[in-house]
Length: 315
Ligand SMILES: [Zn+2]
Image 1 (cartoon, rainbow, N blue to C red):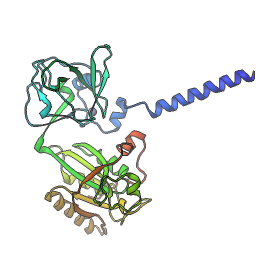
Image 2: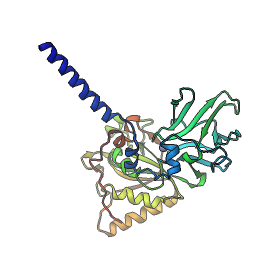
Image 3: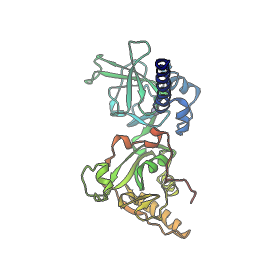
Image 4: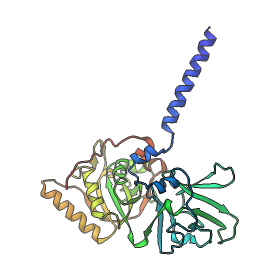
């Protein structure tokens, strides 16, 4: 009897562990995508990105499109390809001989023969990749559905860098901003070259935990993102945000253009007129060191929400 009890106990533990594992590592399903504020898709786009369909050849709007710029995921806005890698293959679909590093995932297709390509960020279906056809020196053709893509003109891309305490929370909110193409957490404003998280935690590197935001100027403005930044942390705190204390948790805008500096000054003035004693520093951008992978997109990965960044309307 004891032996049977042990067996039953073993299976109960195994099943519980499996359920917990699946809940934690289930990956992004479509419901998660909606929760992450992804773009609303048309039924045609859903057919491609979610149901892994294929558009008719020679029908897509980017098949014959050669403007300079970037192609991003229609669902999550993540940058996937540059126009430099685009070439004319005559196959009827947009063709690229390389992806932006780390942005495209490759898997064996359900047909067991071809290699499917998916957006690394949201898992949306893009098309297939073929090698050995000899079109370009890279000998690779990413055959992508136009409906999986959106084009961004080179001159419409802009970068902004914000620090407001723990970078997990700063990124959580800025990622939700309309027109945001990518976010990455990292360290900037200090003197240590290629700092690690542990080094930054000592407060001796001079760096702030910060978030680099790349956005599409045709869809949003720096001002809108800066408002979101000020409304999701307490800019009156000096070298502190919530329970996190230290110079690495200071409030600081690292402007990348003179216009960003002007806009930030204007917004701080507005907050000061509301009686707030704003501690946010305004500094020209410096080298931005990407943070460790496990810090990137932390709250989406862990399905949690920030403990010290709460939205409060101020403008
Ligand atoms: Zn995507």
